[in-house]
Image (cartoon, rainbow, N blue to C red; front, side, top):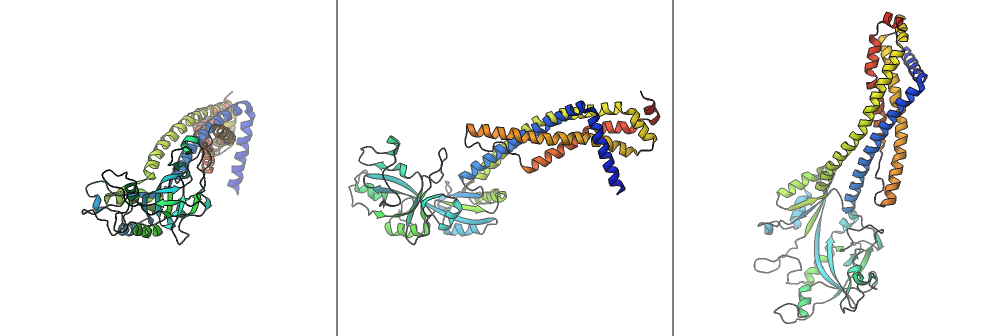
Length: 449
């Protein structure tokens, strides 16, 4: 209890001594305010830019996802993406799920309109993880029959085969097609289609392939103006429903996009275009990615880009923080000067304290507390100023570009760290003046005028 009371007495003395010289204290505190505000604002800009970059990458897809594709080398035939490989990858440590992707091209027809669809089929479980915003209908996989889900930009690519205008890219007006309700006919056998029209060189026209009316299960919601969707150009469907349909359509023929044996015949199994491997943590992505790459597959993920960009942002943050630190260093010099002047002016007072038997550690603590008080007050005011400047920066940035929201970001840890740093800087700056006060001779100090 006695030590606590002693501490409170020292606290009261140090605070009262500061305000005996108001002008000097205010100017010193102002230096700390500018230093703290400079560091916090500079670091917040670096953090805001880094966070904005991460959000941008997340909009391109999951940061924990790895894409596996076939090797393009001499051993490509031995590195096919099949169900056996899917099972092998599922057993790798840190792998949560593996979704095979089968991509094919098909021709969509509605009246005189045509569109070459890029169809991406995946297991229905994959769509729940993709974060596709549904504008109308539902995602694939909730029906027992094959249905298509169209990206928000598919409608734009319907062209008028009669050549009498009406294309979106010529007029800026979307075709009068309701993807949810109008009957869209799909031609899967593209080779047979072109052959039937006599467009294949050296071949006579053959019987046109069958058209299939594939119902629509849903359409993606159009993004806000100025934004884009990574899913917009594709047409999606359930892999388990598409494969049987393709085998039925291309009976004894090579399915569009599938490889052929050396004798030119189709394989019995289906090979995928890519595999989407989901890892349990972003920290383990590179480990799994390296393992798959060593197996001989083409592997990539956003983690490589993110790590590179994070290093760059780390350098930027260090530079910005260094610029702010210069201001705080200048403030530390101001604190040191204030405390030295205080000691010179209070030399006799220090001598009296020593003669009366005051503990040398208490004298040191008194001056350290005064310096710490300057750092604390300057830190608090500096933080208030930092939040104000940050709000102004964000408002100006947002008015200039809508996507530049939160370009200055001050997290809670930065608030406490900057305040603690300001107090420590103050106490470090006051350390040498405090030591000088301890070493003063009591008699010489009392005789000092």
